[in-house]
Length: 316
Image (tube, rainbow, N blue to C red; front, side, top):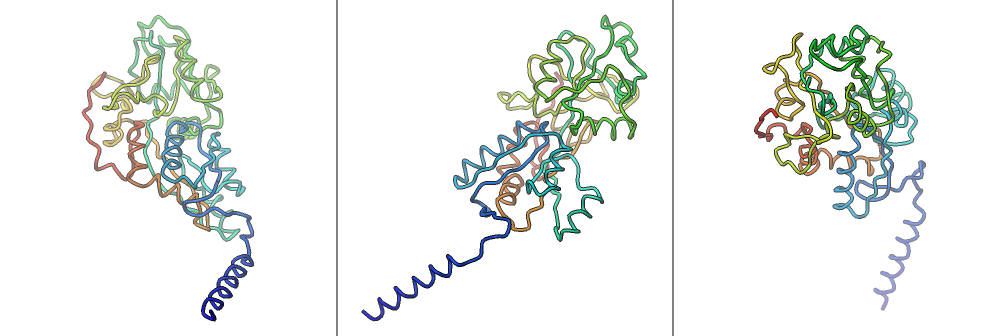
């Protein structure tokens, strides 16, 4: 009886001690695989990030990931403000951003998880689907405004180039990587609200060129990942000044792998979670074999599984 009484007292004391443990100052209760957190992601990666979340939550019932799909500028801003602990973007931290974190005793991480192809799409009625990076630059800077300036036999008039959002990663890529830091200077370059609007606009506008992330275009029913959405056509892009069939490539995974497709960009997980909570758990899942295979299925190039890619490339 005495022994049972001693166990009872010990159990009660342990309960009191647990109840008296101080709660985290930030009020968070999530752990590596439980709880609820908000993350943010560039809207151009919405299809693939949502699929990652759906699978992760199915495998981890006690975890809830609440995504905020927005522009890259806003996504990183939310991370800097400590509104979220994880952001998906196409760049790492700038020196100024790192200094901001370090001044608050944080040590953020940037983890590369994939390579994305920035696709150029045109209307199905447009027969001209070869283009060089040089000509894309000329369109963006206003040196070229008419289809006949690039394709003399074209029956189309002024080129209308559309992005998903003025603050998106696609616009930043166009300015930094295609135009060499120069601003976009063309009255026929527009920014809509999201990638679906770009696809819809191009599908209805013969003169349009749209710029979208390739994960919005992948035909999920095609196991070879060599076909895209039916309502538009995907252009082949050349790094050389003159685009020809033998030097132009579509954003297929194999061409991303061999660096043949010139409009490629990395995808990073940006983390600032010193408690190693659920944000780290989700990040770990995206880097895992299961998470990387979701990226593979979406038509992007997984960072960890690069050596496992085996696809038959057959231009269509």
